[in-house]
Image 1 (tube, one colour):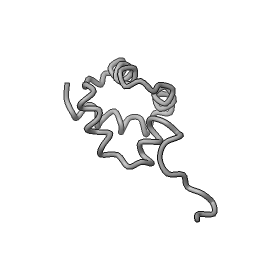
Image 2 (cartoon, one colour):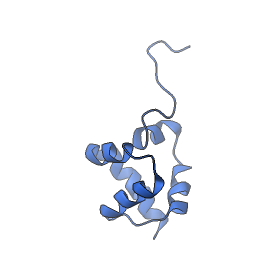
Image 3 (cartoon, one colour):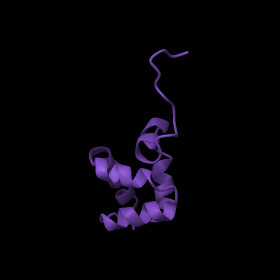
Image 4 (cartoon, helix red, strand yellow):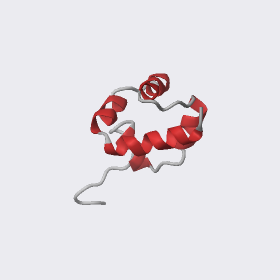
Length: 77
């Protein structure tokens, strides 16, 4: 299990819409890790948390949950 696998997963998610949609559908970290492992990315929850902490709110929202993070509005306040 390596930290690099979690980092590589986040890079792959940005390019793979199917994987992105599948991961967005889960709110459970263990299910997230299991999906990643099916794709050949092997890491644990601690390593996942470490990589998530490096992401901006917008990057996290794009990967994990579309309801998280800042929203860009046409007319910002």
